[in-house]
Length: 208
Image (cartoon, rainbow, N blue to C red; front, top):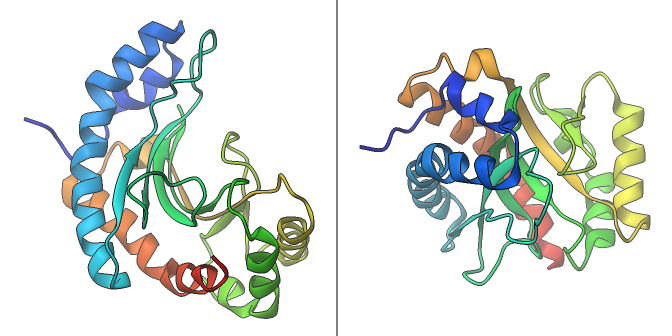
């Protein structure tokens, strides 16, 4: 029976040597957790947003040599794909779990989104103090919004001005903490993160 929380082993999988070995472990142990979480999140977020949302699990199909450093699933208002849309994303690196509102570089009007976020900066700066921004979905680096408002503005300007820029807003939970949660706690931390981000999600959709 599939579980809906992550264990220490799930995080250690992201250190498994070799592409095929790591992907085999991801499919066997991590993606079943993703499936359980995604079903519940998509249902609740569809109710919250008033639109049908669809689940997309990262397959890492283009990789031929190097194993992925992170793995994730996205929830987006498009059955065919998620990368061209602002979307909710949950996943893990070897040392932390993340829950992001994600704007990948494929989103068509990142300039418009960046401008709107800059015009309504208080929506970001009023988020709880453990909320972060990451400029790159492939890297674990992120910074706290409340502690780095100047850097927040710079990242939003970059989203507006640079074609390949990305923006992720949300929370990171270290592996030790996240692996200590039960199913209810895991869901509440992730879903609670996305509830806080709903005003930004709705704002981002005004341009796409």
